[in-house]
Image (tube, rainbow, N blue to C red; front, side, top):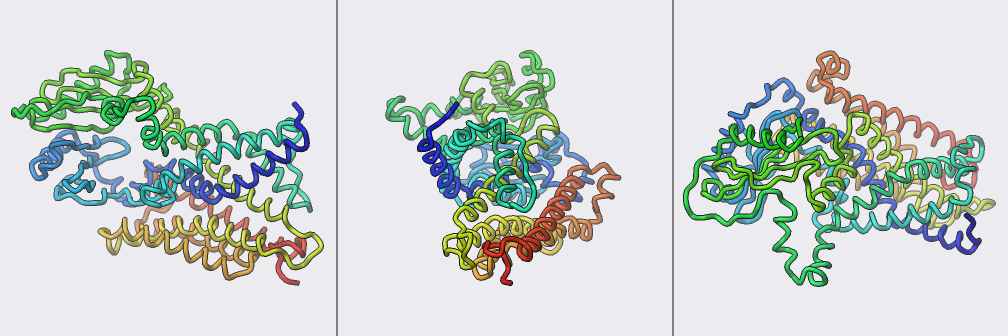
Length: 521
């Protein structure tokens, strides 16, 4: 397929500017997104002695649920709770108070905390991924960025389609660094294109779902969409309280009943993960038990039961779901890699790092394409873009590693301040790195912040081992693989940052003397 030169120039311009506009946000989303693949491991890594604590039982979960319902009347309207299992050895209950604030409780801590235990790091990384850490507006911003991301992918495909197979595996290292970066950018972009298109579509769907409903409500649903949302999104039917007292909630019976229903519908490996209980203590109380199963794209399925009798009210299990639940379950599983085995997790991790490289390298290619080859003094736009790229992108890497280190230290000296403390550390470090890059030459800022990233990321494993005794080899020897993999990945990333720092020094000293990345000679 051939395109005219005018068409290719138009798509090249579109690809360049859409990539620049959305590139910084997408770098954050992909780097943090790669780390969210360890969201099941991070709570254990943050509080590593939790791995030595025996897993709670269903009786412990029953005690927690009863304690919360007894002390907090607002929780009787609607309360959720995780079942004790591999990802959450200890059950956690959560509900909203009269002001709409989410509260959390766990065994022997029934008063209601605004932060769940041991989840600060996982939540921080996830917030950076889907909202850049910005409340409310950040989610919608990332939805718009996902749409721009899709435009950049499609325009990039049009640009490279005429010579796709000829340049697909062309990686030409050598003195022409721009050509090497261009080749790497193209190869990674083309090979991972199907995954990136999936990330763009599912990201837009998940982030903009409420805006989509608001737009479609008056056009298609005659203003009645919001009333239909609970029935469409949840499994258990919405029932009004009767005002009559009902039997208590027997978790052991309901847990067994959910597994029985799942097996009867052909899901043999259903494993309960969390529940949602509505109108506890009322005769019309309902419970929705969500669990995971293997061998399906959307592993999460749910069973809705009458909380008093265990009678089946509805189900949305793999192979039995309606189109709405199947679509949402598949979109979530595809976006976060919640399907398959460990190979899928590592594949998504590499795709996340590869995506971050795409947007970082895209900025570098723009800077090089605007460079004046025979002039020592480069334009202000190129210099400012170089500083912004280093400050925002490498600064984020430093900030995330600093928050990991801070979490370990705060767990020892001020455990009650961990969640707030790591957020202050993360965003203050990020701002400091951006300011540092703004006042230094681009070659200096790149080299110094890359070394800062290498050192801070090395400290993730070092501080963790020094404060807890769980060095990587000790964790591996005891079979604590969640702790081992977090530390091992940190050391691998630190090595990568150090390698890039040394390469930046070589380029500053021996590269093109007119580049913005060159040191004065």
